[in-house]
Length: 136
Image 1: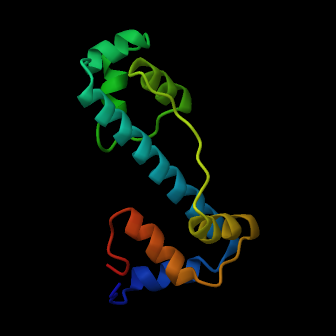
Image 2 (image 1 turned 180 degrees about the horizontal axis):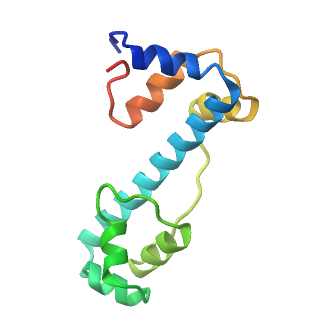
């Protein structure tokens, strides 16, 4: 990927050399990516079902605003319990899956050790997943 250096990029790469900031960056990035993937999957399942958001809310005994916020862009801080309930109402379940070995090497080891020998690559990979230009 072609990148143009910016102060943001240089600061991010430097920050990833600090063990605590590295861990925080990885944890938050994984959290955001996971929630986005789960919620987007629920939105897709809802659109393929015969239910609407009010039906799902009724099924899980919540106010319609809870389901509306959960499935709306920009509001992504659900509990796993709420995600599991909505998934069940749509005939689905939330499961865990192992990371691919390449992804585990980039994420799991730096998270465990607080170190990475490739902070630029880690930053670029995570920003790519979020749809951002790496050095923008």
